[in-house]
Image (cartoon, rainbow, N blue to C red; front, top):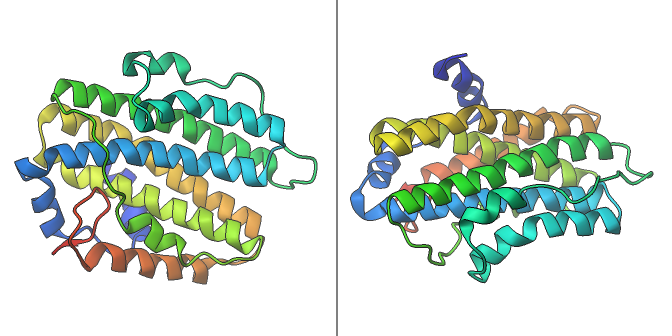
Length: 252
């Protein structure tokens, strides 16, 4: 499957295309380090979000603790500046099997899809660190963009609708990431562009996994809810945003 074929369902799913003004802003030399740093944090946040879903909805405390231990070296590197980033690939594994709770009807499917997603996102996290090393970008703390919070504030408060909404949000975040990697690839350094293209297949699968989980768990037609979040996401992408980040809106 070529890039155009891979992106076709994503471009149909998204309600708006990334504005050309954002691509122009993203390729300015002064924004290069911010773009890469925010990508790094996005990979960690994606892992954390998927792990939260498993721990809250699918497993018991013992399995939840094993999941937290898996993520700990990556979080310690970012939040406490502990450890050598070159050692992280050896840490990207679960110490024990994760067993679904007996009362979770969808636990195994959620675990299977989200564990694979976490493993891939943590691998991408390490690959971004390799890029930072290559381009001599030093890690520093940055503030989060409005994007994820802007989506999640529309999540319903009662279950299972809350879980379904969170999964739909996950689908849009992954789809937008895929679309932006493809938009950026021709305009950045060749090494970074090749890296972005290499991410497209997994990002596209992640969006599909989130969407299929949302549909299966809902057990009913959720097309209106998907469309609703599509409009929310599109507004975040196409309206003025003074805080440039990987998922930011129209440069103000």
